[in-house]
Length: 233
Image (cartoon, rainbow, N blue to C red; front, side, top):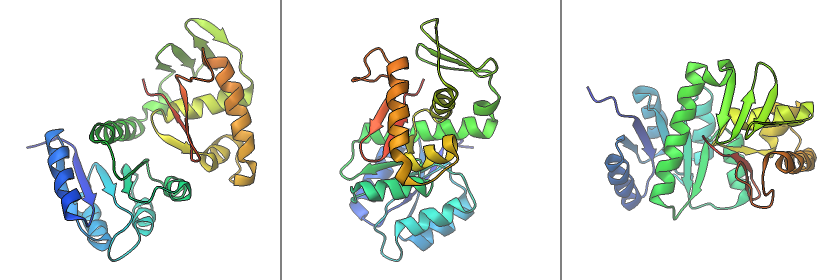
C-alpha cells in the first residue's frame, strides 16, 4: 500500500493541473484532482487528503468560500495557489485558515518546500509535539518551555513576558506565515487590525534581541503587507 502523502489539487486550468500532477508526482506525492469548488469539497471529504492545493478563481464558486468550508471541519494543510496577488487576498486567505499562499506564476521548488513545511507542521500538531515538548530548538536559538528561558548560542536572552509569548507563538508555527490578526489574537487576545502597529513594534524589539543583524533577519522574516514567517529548523 502506497503511504506517500495524498494531495488534492483544486484547479480548473488544465495546463496548470497537468503540470502540478507531474511536479508533485515526481516529488513523491500522490495526487487527486478536482476542477470545481463543489467537486473539491466532495473529494476533500471522501479522500481525506494530507494536503490541499487550492486555486481561488474557480468556475462555480470563489476559492475563499471553499477554504472557509474546509476549515469548518478539518485542519488539513491548505496552500492557496492563485493569480490574485493583492495583499488583501493573501491576508484574507491566511486569516481564513490557509497554511500558505503562492502567487502564479510560482517556483516549483518553492511550492514543494512549502508543501513539506505544511505537512511537517500538521504532523507535529497532530502528535502534540508543539505543546508538549519541553524545548524548541531552531538553529542556534533554544527555547526552554518548562523554565521559560531563551538562549541564543548558549547565551541567555532576557525577554519581557510579551516578547517571550510572541517568540513562542512564532516558534510553534515555524515555517508558516502568521498574519497580524492571528498574532494579535494569539498573543494579545485581540483581533483588531487597528492594533497591528503593536505587532510591528514588538517584532522589531524581538528582532533586536534574537538577530545578529536585525536588518537582515535569520529567524524572524517579514512577509510584506501580510505578516511574518519564522524560520524552520
